[in-house]
Image (tube, rainbow, N blue to C red; front, side, top):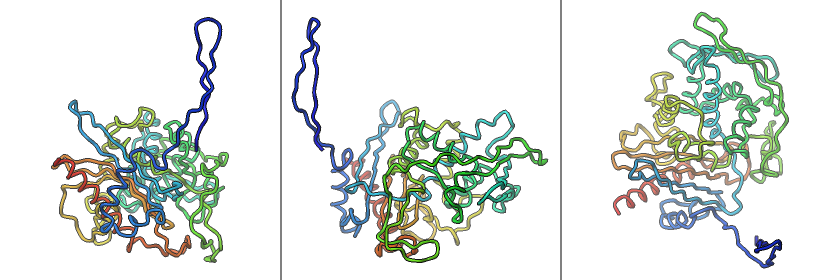
Length: 415
């Protein structure tokens, strides 16, 4: 699109000199520095396979950020962005668990005067449709009680959906949206639980939540949150596929409409990962209002293998090290013995969308970079039929892409 402009210049005296002329610019098809990413994709087309050869078909989006330590110790970040033409819609799935985790802690910090903290036992009560009373957690081997911290551990270690829904209820969609707006993420929408039976109206109303002492005395109670005004989706008509399966497993001959579901642009989650890993790299308004110990807590569980957790316990016979590490390790099986590369990340996998927003670090080689990627693998173009190419195309591509950028970092370090 080309733009026309008029400039008015004030001269000496009471008169204005108006100059009419045409100035123009054309917005780039891709965001800043996309040619560098395109060059890396081109150089590795053979190892990256079908996705690199047909990026538009697979809705490929990449944000790569090089991290360089300056002389004064303050990291300098250089961001490179690639978008497939039209920046196609993708469903974020579990990516929203990262902002929900951080904002749940922020909201909890307002309860300090009530003697409530991350480990305080909590109960999600039931007072409406699609609500259930949850006051025990069998995965907490310490005391069998749920808590904000324990739900976050479950989400960041194995992307637990049940835990997400409970913290969604604690935060409430209205509080989440208000906080996201103030942070500069007005397009991100977090408007539903991950409980399949819930309608949009039921998702808009959230449970009473209360915290209690070891003696079962109530320390703080949050009442039932009434439905708030429905939000318009930032995209006019977000959709995926040519067909979709409805709740009755009937094939509908039109795309699936996502206008009443969660949404988060890749650059928003990428920015949130940066805000947690290197807060000074983002604007003050985009930093989470958390203590250093809370940020360390989030980083720790974003970077752990599931088997490294002592509470909850996740045996590697059930949850492989690569379970939630799509980039660099997505197609790896068995125990990962090398500890030189550590990945701090959040992932999403649903409806054929596969995403990973990660901070990849090797302290021994002084390498650190952010890499956020999303692809769409749905050959038959039927959404919600459970037939997606995650294993045959998605995970191998994600693993190789992470290693391609890691090798690029190694090569630059040598130079």
